[in-house]
Amino acid sequence: LKDPMVVCVTGAAGQIAYSLLPMLGRGLALGTDQLIDLRLLEIPQAQGALEGVVMELQDCAYPLFYKISYGSDPAVLFKDADLIIFLGGFPRKAGMERKELIGKNCQIFKTQGEALNLVGKPTTKCLVVANPANTNCLALSTFASRIPKENFTALTRLDQNRAVWQIAARAKMNVAHISRVIIWGNHSSTQYPDVNHGQIATKVDETITSKPIREKIADNNWLNGKFIADVQQRGAAVIKARKLSSAMSAASAAIDHVRDWCLGTNGRWVSMGVVSDGAYGVPPGLVFSYPVVCENWTWTIIRDLTLDQFSQEKICATARELVEERRDALS
Ligand code: NAX
Image (cartoon, rainbow, N blue to C red; front, side, top):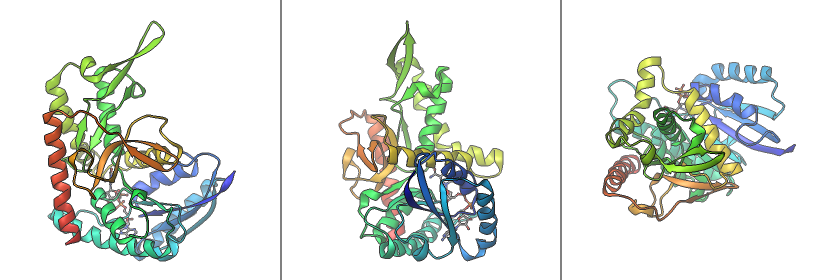
């Protein structure tokens, strides 16, 4: 077994955490040989519920959880962390404006960013799930300026997984056959699920060949219309049906994101919110979802893809929304 990594999860008494922690304990994110020094952060009012979660984790008796601690002070729990998964945030209340939600969450990420700046390491890696995920991630990295910007990522893998499922179902294939589906931009309804570079693997006489998604699914009206809208609105559809927001799928996507970042994608493309260096005309500094490949805790943007006008407009629109969010968050 490898020496323990310090992994902190915020919002640890919430519903995503309840699905995520068992997957972490079973080694699905960092490998089944990686010991974990687990730290759980919650607000003071949720410490009672958190104690219950800790009791259950103890009762799961995961051998990989070498130590479990919890509390409400980020300056204690973030100390020397190797990985922090940020699930904790201020929820959207009925009648609340997006701007107000951004303001409240940015305050949380400012406080946590300042704590991280004091006690984190230059190698601490961060995944932000709490919404607005891209802009929270930007606020966090802004206030933890001692830590390289490349160490901060936001979750758009759930959107990718949703898109891949829709394509697989339409093509009557397994999700494993689908590759290179991209989520561009913000984890919001302006995100752009793009299949123009996507492939579907088909077995012909024992040989596997890949065909463009647009060849296999010839219905352009569906691909450019309902497919995009359904992926963008999937979170709302789950809330409508479940009366609760996505939790199991969000936890699973967060685990996928960490596993791929840590253990590598082996050339597979995945989508992650990462700091823009201006690639594809996106304003530098925004946390923007791009197609990337990963290896040993580094990510590299897939460059030089040809974008048609439809894609360029969609990417511009989601970048514009992120510019507005940045203004609301940091002004
Ligand atoms: P819950 O409300 O069940 O849990 C959030 C927890 O965070 C609560 O227990 C709360 O006490 C805690 N919390 C609040 N402020 C905190 C702080 N300052 N420090 C530490 N903990 C704090 O929400 P849940 O369903 O678990 O969702 C968590 C976040 O993920 C939400 O912001 C949600 O909007 C976001 N999501 C993001 C997704 C993505 O793909 N990026 C998809 C799923 C989800 O909607």
